[in-house]
Length: 181
Image (cartoon, rainbow, N blue to C red; front, side, top):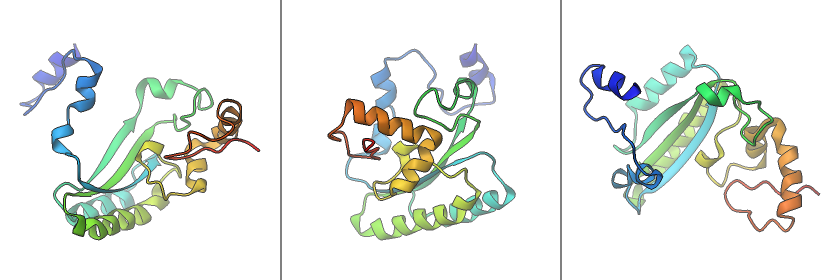
């Protein structure tokens, strides 16, 4: 039903809705983001998109530093909002958007430029956010307070789970949740 509705809505340039193995979906955009690109990401959750935020998106969109750089907003809706915030690690289930500002370029010399764009964009937009971010879209230099904000009230429980299943913190890369003391 959904596929028919998408194909009947205007004249889409591309419709990729079809049965496919999971690995095909995961690799669908690999050609658009080849290995070797320079990346700097900043992310936040947003419960609403204010007029102030729209103005910032427009300003930073017009100042995009490289053709691959982007800002994405992913809706948090549907089934995910029907699960209690403390049922899993993911706590931002009240609806809204997950946003990411991504400075991207193949040229290593452009890393400072794309990093500065993403950081400034995030710094100005962050006050309109819900506080945390989707941890897979965060840089490793975000700090423990950002990680705590991203898990909200689930963070303490997650440290206890970590103590039970990974007391030596073997799995400590990315956005680490250390074991409870």
